[in-house]
Amino acid sequence: MTPKDTGQEGLIFGLLNSTFTFLCAEFQGRQFAGRGIDSIDITVYEVAQLPFLDPKAIPQEAATRIIDAVHKIAERPILPVLEEVNLPDRRALDDAVLEAIGFEDPEERAKVLSELYAAVCQRVESRFERARSSQHPGEKRTRPNAEAIAEELFKELSPELTKKFPDGFVPMGTKTKSVELPQGIEDFERVTYNRLRVGGKLMDFDNPDEAEFIQFAVQSGASASIAIPVESIITHNSVTGYRNYLSELAKQVEDLASSRTQDRKLKQRIVEELRQKLGLRSLQADKTARLI
Image (cartoon, rainbow, N blue to C red; front, side, top):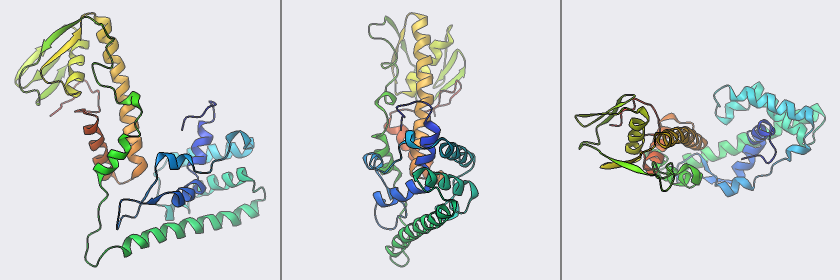
């Protein structure tokens, strides 16, 4: 979510990560991807329909409590819901959100908080039970499909993050020179700032930006010849722009994968599937990246 008014990011972050919002998502979403899977699926438009407090209507004291609490939570790993609700910083966040909703009496908030956590735990345990009961005896639990998840997440990527190099980073009409690549492009290495190895052959460049330009073009799928700008300033601006683009792309891909799972291996598979859908050999701009 991008706030219309700057300065509200921390407050919005806290509201979105409250247990109240989680419970709403539980009811809005659906059990994910078939029998035996104990997670939920919720689409972007469904997230947009979740109930959400107007940040401007929240008293400053409650807003400060929400921001302080969510920042503390952000500094640690997030635990499963049944464990998360027992942590002091989680309870501090949810208590502050309840105050923002309108529960001014601390004793009343404590009672409502207990009821909220009971409802959340009951909902989650019920979902787990449905997942377990859908399995036949001796049947292995179905694993989430990384490819299917990546297909959905790919649609959520901003159009600005699906540009191709070099076409999307070199101005139209730029005068270029052609650089032929040796055979064996599948074995590619940035050896030094101005030296590449393609297959068994070395390619040396006087301008390090040209070596990086070739690297990025190969990462984006080039395999035969590459048109490099004649003017060095355009080459420099192109690789600098693409380096920043890759950094933002890698962050968004990681965030999208993390939004679906905290399982490290599954997240890695989702990231890899997204990389392939983007047609990239790497999501890294490392100057010595080995692409084999």
